Length: 515
Image 1 (cartoon, rainbow, N blue to C red):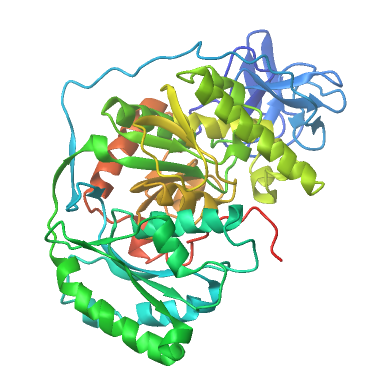
Image 2 (image 1 turned 45 degrees about the vertical axis):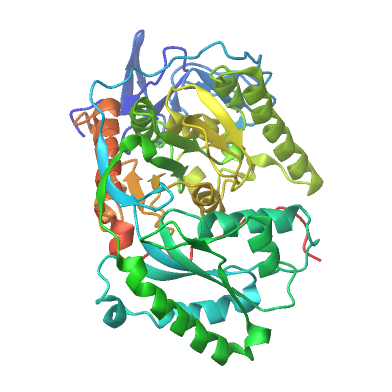
């Protein structure tokens, strides 16, 4: 790190630079017209002014405005929340003006996955217990807990039995928006390629009736070794005679499913059948400098192979959406994105809130100042491929290529939505050190800086901090992420899987009121 300049300028029009490492007072940036020395300590990922920025003038990073000076900022000053405000951006939207198709590779790549009888491609092999309501969550967990290593040791091709339990399922309008979002999410997990078989457990009197879920989404179970389908098994606690009897029967039913679920073998499947979910959490000022743009490279490589890559967290697109409308393949796709942006503005206003409550406390400690700055860095995960579709939360993703899904900027529901939509691998960037997994899909964790990577090496799969040190480039780390995606899709265990993380992160989104 000592051989690299302390500060990095990301675009020639920027009036700030970003600290590669903790910079002491008087350490400087070698600008064209002389060295700009820091007037105080500038922590890693934080910003330093290299020009005088008068009150009301924009702060520029990535060549884009990320906020406005709330007082005059001198060269060498620390630039952060104490002297930067959000202000109003006046974007001039362009539509479909920057569409560049990634070059097709000369050789098709494959991963070693599971081919389901109906043709879907799986990266893992789980049995799921779908809980319709919080009132059946405990029963679902009791059933799952019965399948410990002593039982599953006889079924080496089964990755586990998971209880998909949550805190909702009642006290909202029957058939209303929240009910349908929950049903869509539960159905997305039940039908996910990584779920070999499933059981639905309800209470019996809840709003989120199991019968509604099964009928609304035409749920069926496919036998592992044939294309014969059957209706899913539904157990309501009130009908079974209580928790103990429900658990007893649930265990017995799943034991009968184990041999069929185990009867799978990995085989070569084209990389084009990977659906990648991209997420950033616990971000810092280097997220948009290292890990996120490297994920963008991997995303473009996957898209070039015919695969799908999902960019989520629309509140973390806010302020940078004008960059995506230029990449939309048509005006309809662009307008759908802007409609979702407007929905979030109205949603925040409804509660007297502002979208700029994101960045979080940890994001700001890591150097992120405004939502505009965070969004510009987050969008980098989407690479440069054309934007082909915009999906609502947990909608089934059917389009190949780069797409957006409307999820909140909170990691558990965001990843839950992408998995419900079909994501079979997740990459998750972090600068502060988020620890995350979400069964039944593997999560690859990517550190934005080496200090955190080395401190939390048991949780991080890839260190993008090498980019700051000059030991790697965005392109080389992006290629490393691409190869890791293929390896993990083929069965390589991630750090979060090694620690058995992922049972508690299933988190359906409920945007509406609870009565």
